[in-house]
Image (cartoon, rainbow, N blue to C red; front, side):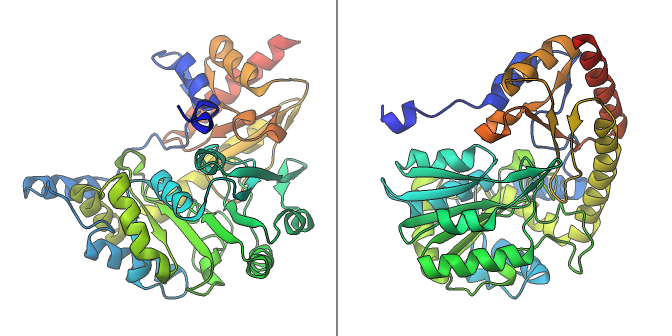
Length: 386
């Protein structure tokens, strides 16, 4: 067994979930997914594909018609993106891993902005890279980027900078000015940027294109920039395992080879479902975003009213990330909440050491009343601690 694999830390989120799975009395908000099923029109497209017998291999880079559909979808949000720059992957996490495999050698210096979903720091570690973290700074419950610290951390010896915005778990979203400053700096240092933008449509601030600021808005096709996306969040397709990469043209053929050696290709029926999802974007995604905003605006004020809770409304994503004053290890607190309150949350230290004392609450709930019941359980549990 490679030491890098042996030393990987098991998921603390899974550790909490495993303690509560199968219990009907637990309100679970630990995973980053909605409890709403994939829309009927998307499911039906997959069923029809299977009924046609589309059960064979596809092109490594994805069905041409899906790549074209993604290019049209992305170009409606950002400057024109050619379908030749799109690679379809078996999930957003696979997209991230493929990018890391393509860019990172053992011993390379990688910087990741944290707190962040732990896969993003584990993937370069799997490749044997030296991973350094650049912590966001919490101010009154809102996490912010220390841009001078980032410039100091990313040097000419840094191979890759990993940025997830809108951010899981904090909801932090980069401003256009921050993105431009980071892109300019990485151009100077020769550093690649891996931008995880899977939450770009789950954005609650008013914008002309109903999407968070993206590196695609300000970059050139040949920049050292890889952007990853997923159908999971905006289209309610977490279990379908389908994502995509936007790549510099010079990378596309090599990514195709990596896909061959990892998964060969994404299944055809899931790609047909994705085409239907894109065709019905106007029906699906705005409704999803409006509902998530309602959920956020239901949950955050209730949390903020609890004694000892520090929280700010996320600008994007599907999470409330809050600090519980007076409590120590987040993993221990999350486990106690499952056992003693029937409430399933993700521990903050699953995402970074600096998030110790914080908890993540996924508010993507079909019924906002579940959120209210969850807050009641947290309130009662906190009262019992006194």
